[in-house]
Image (tube, rainbow, N blue to C red; front, top):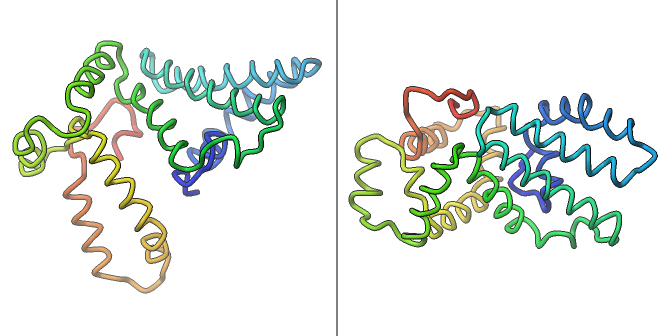
Length: 211
């Protein structure tokens, strides 16, 4: 449900991975809240923490997944406390869509890295070349030309450019996708984008990354 247009992390998790989130809420979150219902604030904080820590472990037994779950749980706890204790509404709780994207992307950094060694390596690479690749021909153009993917070559400017393109074309492309009449130019463009930006490999141990 267009999760990248969420104005808060709470809204983001209501819009994405909906079936999994509903299962976690029904079988982990609600039972914990009910069990400790005499302390409403503490029960919700405990339920959020357990739900997202278990969600991280569900993805795999790696530190990156656990950190990812803990960070997202912390986001939701802060938003919950902000609404209930301080009376801050959703639209004021976050700066909006861009800030939510930054928060989600930060947690996904650990999800992508998985291990502590990879986290340290990715951070070192990012710190060395945060805005531009060291060598565009080797680290950007050549990788695409060889049919590989360039996830590790992303930096701030490239990411910002992709965000702008995403927001500019997401809704029009969705409208075209929902039409019953086939647009061959649209299919051609989508196919080209998949070939250009796609990550083609022999597969990954986790099914989400195989799409």
